[in-house]
Length: 150
Image (tube, rainbow, N blue to C red):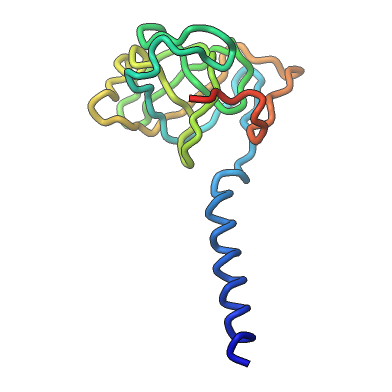
């Protein structure tokens, strides 16, 4: 009898654990057409990633105006607007990420400097697709085929 009481508790704990693992998995991918927007937190790449290979095969450079996004096609141009200051920067998507719940874009350090977020580390932003195509299909964010193995 004592064992029977523990089974629902264990199942409940398992359910909570599984929900925590999939925390951001339910987020719908952003549209890829020109003018599509999304709002969320931006972060930027650490120094250690400079010189590594991005998901599209390029060498990552913190000195360039590039960014990582989970679903936008490579070479998409995106305007990033910092919501608290209105500062803007335009970046090209060349990598996949960020893979942290709640973050929508990882910026190169140059792009982060352009919108004065280096000291804060994170900033709430709006991203807007500038050169998208409504016929282009975004990659599946849950697929490992586009993820870098850093």
